[in-house]
Length: 264
Length: 364
Figure 1 (cartoon, rainbow over the protein chains, first blue to last red):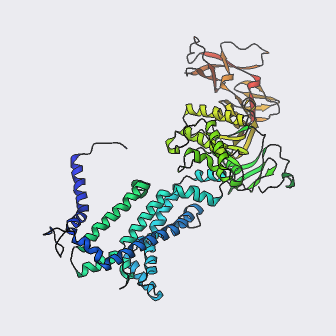
Figure 2: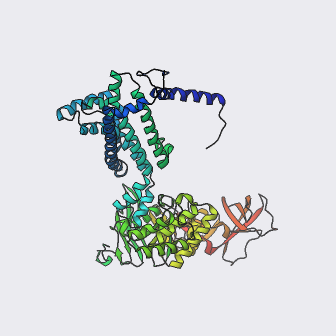
């Protein structure tokens, strides 16, 4: 790429913009280190007590396990369903593939609150409310569009002659898929997994409809906590979540290249 | 391998070559991408499929490889009809224009892929991969990924990968088109050497007449999905059987004329045209047209035409004249020898060419 000198004014403007975007995140860090019993900035004393409090709060640790397992299950299912769907759309090109492709992305365009209400109305008579299966199904509705989109793009940009070369070398179709197509889609798979994991782990609106008194995800538990108490506990959790998100992003960057997978 | 003896097929001519195409056709709607292709390739021969883009040469190759379905016709290899056999059971080696290497495998694993599919033992596979790498002069690059290699090196890997399985036929789909001019010439000779050394039957698809003429035993010139002519490079160049072949392979002067009574009149010259009647096209290659100050002696078997120089183009090794004669522009070119100078436009000259260099075709 061309390296052109960037004017200092532009640099300053960009810096201010970043500060604006990151300010809420940055402010959470000092608050999480507060020794006070209520959220205030700046804190009057410093301590790590709220980090300790997370691990003794069983509601929070239980909700974290639910969220983690939920995100892992939803990610695995998204890949498992998304990959054949993308393959069918891109390679087998059934009649109306374009329409189907748009249809599969439709849930992203609907307001989540509408989607949540609709899911509530459908799931309630099925007895899925407040169940883990119900949460999985609800989250899949929002992660699958991402999975199908990203995997379709990954598949569509694969050079077909490479697969044809494998075929002429004696590889039957399934072998071609597992030995050539799938490995070439690695970066697409990694970014799909990361995207689905983060979307599921962050999901609040649908989860609010789906969770019950005995089953809660971490974002919902945090929301309910803030409603009742204004202590810096959630700030400490937020910092840990930012670290977790960064970890996922770094893994994606290392294995697949961030710019290559998300910016496409 | 599922196969049917060709003589079991009703109405199928006995296959004569190692590879025989019989009435091979590929139709898209009303358009015939490949139209009734009949062709025999002998064992160990290198045959070029030559033609402009869209002439059906690549589609033909893909049908032979099993990557594209045929609408009708048969593909027979060594006496076996393989028309319905899927690509992975055809035993063909295919080299693509885009190399099509496996990006996630190193050079050695790319080349070993076909052996792995054929369940060749590990020790033998290693030995054959080593030999193949040596054959394409890439020793030392075994652990490199395709992305770390130059275009020429990648194409060598592709060639080794196709050859290591000892395919019955090697198919090359414009293998040199992505390389620069110098490398192209080097690689084309290398491909020819390897093909001869292994004695492998090969099809070489190209739009470049130089590649076809210089390294192939035979050239199949195609146009609009049809085979225009199959012959040795010499045949194709000196005895083009159609106006298309004459015009596509090498450069040519095209003169329109009318024939009757075995003679065609073009640009004021009577040209022998036995068997032609009505509008004809008479063609002669520019470097077979000589330019002089005097008419050739009678009985010299040469046609002569008086004209004036319209334009002279000096290209270093070649001097080309455009001469206006008998109401048409004719090109004459000759290798420069030094010291001859360049004639100025307007200079009167006599153009002449030999009877045997004159091609006559019915005008389409």
